[in-house]
Image (tube, rainbow, N blue to C red; front, side):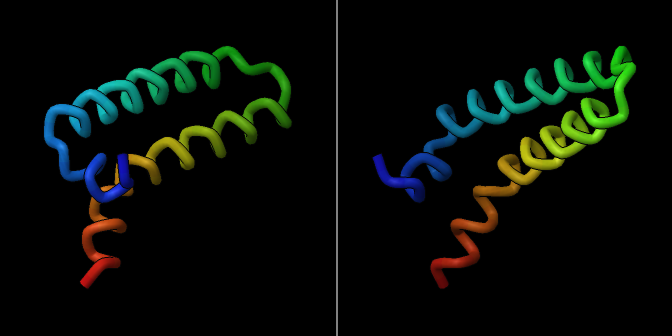
Length: 65
């Protein structure tokens, strides 16, 4: 499956976004319990990367014009 097909398949995209939201929630829980500054920053980076994945649809569709 091509990336454009993936992001434009509503059911598949919605499931993917749900997975991303769950992963972000897990990272937030871990972030709250972090006692090491390096781990804290890594988790912040992971959350940022996951949030960027949620914007993948608009990047793919806007980039193909």
